[in-house]
Image 1 (cartoon, rainbow, N blue to C red):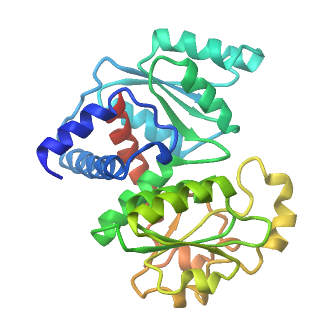
Image 2: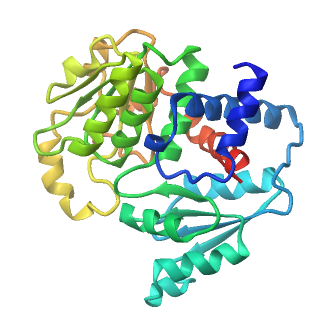
Image 3: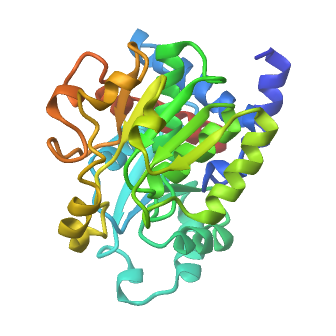
Length: 318
């Protein structure tokens, strides 16, 4: 990307919210990925880069987390800033204060807010009321930070994104929504195999198909894992019962019993396929031990890239 174009993108990203990849142009997502790669290089080389010195990020957690909390907190520290962990029990929203009033108040103290919550409308309401940038750390509808880190990982491993094929096997959840949108914006062909009744959200699919058509990418949604995985460059899966759906675990085990990513299924993909999972994983359920711990697995590279991708987002918008 040319220097002037990068400078222009840097300017237009400043002060923006990061709610979903749907809000970002293809060149903006590519810029964030390349910035993440560069920030990773700097960190590995021991080069200090602290553009957020003196800045603060409030991190609201209504859902528990390992990767999200640690990567944001460490990332903010490495960028020279300070992150505050705020559980719902630490805030007055746990006692009924409105999202609007919380956003207005926190905006007077902080330079940015990250929230990991259940309802997507909570993030939307927070962003509308806040006067500082808001980052979506996960909702029941989307997980854009994970998707950005995932496409950074694929870019690093494959050297490109456009024209590759990603196959997703499993529940049509928040993870597949963000992966689909990222694929559509980046020109990645995407195939989803999921049981009937567990397909991705229809409105999300409509938006993704619209973006994919502009980028010359294809989207397939069906019920056959073998068809989805055929000639795939990347195979991705997630737990069958995401956070908040634990009560459906037994029911989902029955529905998804033929959707395990295992040694037999991956034979249909390209030999140099990447196996990806956003973690935490349930070995023996959605994926066999042979695949997740095998030579094609890049799950911990993905996990590490949460740090670098989120640093790119924070450095760009804060």
